[in-house]
Length: 361
Ligand SMILES: Cc1ncc(COP(=O)(O)O)c(C=O)c1O
Image (cartoon, rainbow, N blue to C red; front, side, top):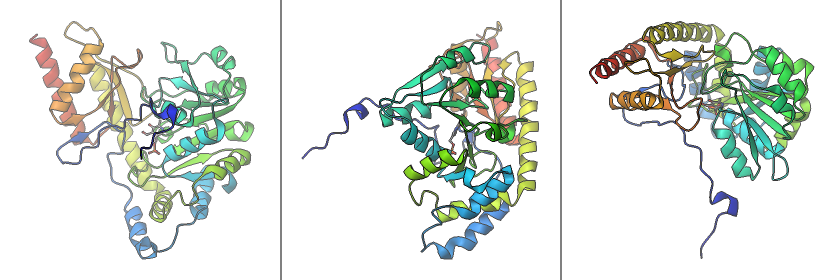
């Protein structure tokens, strides 16, 4: 007996996550994880919960939702928890798109959206970022889609839209606007305030980046009661396991620790940016825990060839970064997660060697 997959899946290009080497010795600057460990309170809470693993977790994540709600000064019913924010993005595609209801996304942004759309059998309309990294609201106004995915701060380009711009977007788009704020804790502005005035706004957040809990898989969504109710209909009942719930609660109980590590990351990021600019490379201003940088050759020319060469050279020296050759706005650059000071020193050392090698060409 043979089983054939549903027709539209035959041509699906599955999402390709950044490499996760299982052997030691690599400097991982490729998936925007936090370079610091999680708060010690997280492991203590997880240890304490271990004997209760025989029981199912709270299907409604009551305590975690209360914590998140009070952190953002929102109602608990405006919060939904996911198995990572990817889980919530998946629920949004399931609930708001199908073959007659399109999604839209900013291009370039998070490459998981088109995959989720394809799985759902819906169409995704790509709204191009302009060359100066802006969004033409007129294009948006004419876009017939049920839901828009807008990553701000942007991945992989690291810039953030101002709240003023986001307001314009929300006022000019007919459907639901999902603002993917995976990196918002590294930015000086976020869109939580928009929730008060607009019921077509939904925010996704994650514990994977600023809270150093990528391995625990916890994210959350903030939105109107109406949207949360719809998402709860399609959510797996036990989508967030017990250890993840207690771990995330413990993280929110140690905000002082997180403020400290975020501050350290921002200082290292800004120092690295200055250093890269000193080498004559281009680097976007960043609102995230990563930098998008465009290397140049000896004559000062920035090119896709340089980006590819730096990417491969770093890999040869056991440093992983991300390279996105498929889009005109990303093909000349590499995305580099901010690591510890020691990791950044090693990164700079290898870059210097690449630059020296270029001089000899
Ligand atoms: C923009 C963006 N959104 C969402 C995610 C998913 O994060 P998670 O599922 O770990 O919460 C990522 C992960 O890299 C991301 O870069």
